[in-house]
Length: 507
Image (cartoon, rainbow, N blue to C red; front, side, top):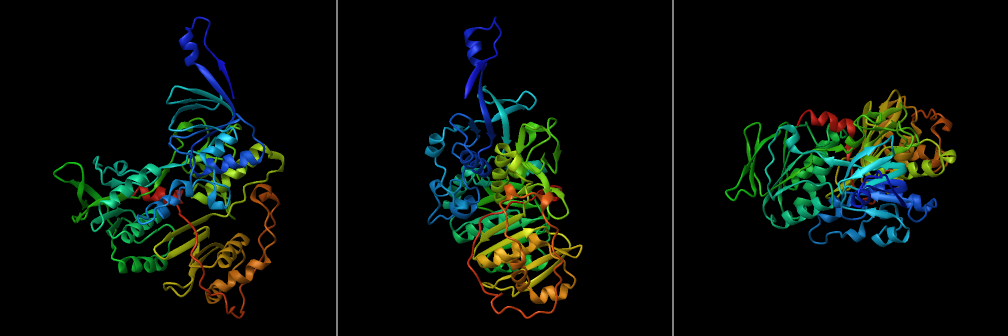
């Protein structure tokens, strides 16, 4: 890291000092999951002291964000930051504050970037500091959508909670601790709302969930899948109110807490606390008018490189070509953030030996006794399989243009999850949906061994990938072991950009 002065000869000594520019080879904006994984990849690829700077508006180093809804909200034994700093979710080392110091990475925490000039390769922070870069990695993530954006007046109430960062989680825990035995209203019906509702019930708080869609996770779950989960939630005492939205909050006499939520259909729901989980919006406003945008994110190529060759984007902020049909998507999920960050750094440091980002979308969640994974794309016709009951492995395939393009599995084993992932990546030809339903999970288990040994994403080129094989579903005996119930795994999900784009118009 170096500094230079751009002050004119007439500038005072104070002005000269104020206009000092700090120079770095690489700068990462953002301090979430993607930033941590990018930092580790930079170090693995030989970045030296003083070359890399990370600017984050959070007060702590990057951490595994899914842990906020999985571990931090467990009041009996809440997870501590030290246990979920990046990159522990991928069985890598924990990147502690000391780790960044040891590797000469400049951490600028609690700082917001006010502006970026991509042509001048310069950014300005809210502290008035100018920083230049050769390569900029945008890992700004996303922010929680607020009810105020949908013309619902939000009070400044101490029991109104969101969950997007560590500060949000800390507040939510404090509120939960004061509401044991009380009533919580959860606004939203997506994965985060489901996970929060699970934590609230587990911590002995009665829950009412309110959302405008016809069922849980309407942009991912089928009606059959959603009905199963909704049935279990109801059995745990959760009241589910679909097809309406809130219209206003009722504030108590102390003017500090919400005491009830009023719905547009006229109902009034008492509330000791309120949790809002209605989606997120990517943090890309710094680059509007400077970079090509699509799907609400920064459009990037297979190297995660934007329309400006010195700017790369990853995670929630990036929009890129995904899947067998090459559709541009923006994926809001930690798995995408981890893998796109690593791939971007590989492309930055070794572009000639780095292929296109060949990514199979993965979304997963855990709530109550359930753990599910979804691979690929929710397109075409759904084919369900398995026994929809607690403790059993069940799921669905999605078939579009006679190809398997998506797979969902609840309560699978490690081998079964790997099998449906492999089968989805192979995108096999499907000619008989009834036979696919009959074979169920056994189909994926029979197809998976046909896949060639996978290469690391950063060395794999889509242009060189062979076309998917024509695997035709035929009459075959089911494997006796295909319905084995497995371990519950996985950690959090964000949702599709399209899912939230449609959702925003309804809230």
